[in-house]
Image 1 (spheres, rainbow, N blue to C red):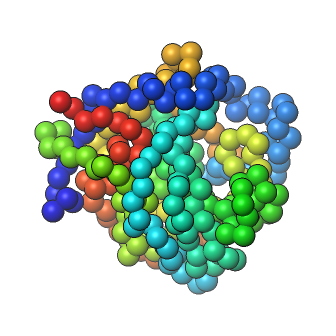
Image 2 (image 1 turned 90 degrees about the vertical axis):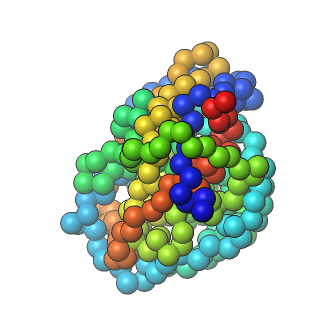
Length: 282
């Protein structure tokens, strides 16, 4: 089965994404409040999740995923903060105490350098090498800018990646991807954290319902290091593109209470490679 096929992406070409938009190297997060007032707000993201302080919430039932299995071709964009893939199909989430249905808009990643710390959220102070964000907005809105004016207009799913040993000699690729291929099976997504926060990049709008899943997705060290080769337009490496954790300022973090389950990485890794246009070794 595909779950038994392991691969790596140590040799690939992704430099083309840096010329798609021509966005310059982004200033450090400490300077984001200049021209982005919300970046200095009281409900900013990411945060450090302290597991013993997370409040058990029975209403945080498993999320419902609609059309996550539908495949689509991907187009990369360099946002100046990350590599982004817009989602051209109607996929949505609901349930899990969300107030309504949210449709998927885009996905992007945050990573460190050469497999080092790179996630935005941390768990009990632990920073994972990479974090995937799938961004959704309320179904009733036509664009993200409008959704960001609603205090709960946007819902983001966060997934951690961790480094594990994977066989570097078996490879496969996918002609297209689905969102379902990028994340663990639904039955393994019952354990998650929920809090009210913001976008982690400017304009830092405090309009985001965050769902951060507890179970990390494994990738090989070579796969993780490959992201360090992504470049800005000025040929500087796009590394450590994560925002430091922000104060909770009295906000509560809730936990669904589900059990964290191990996941297999092969199909997830292949889908990730396809999404970001990474080539396979010859």
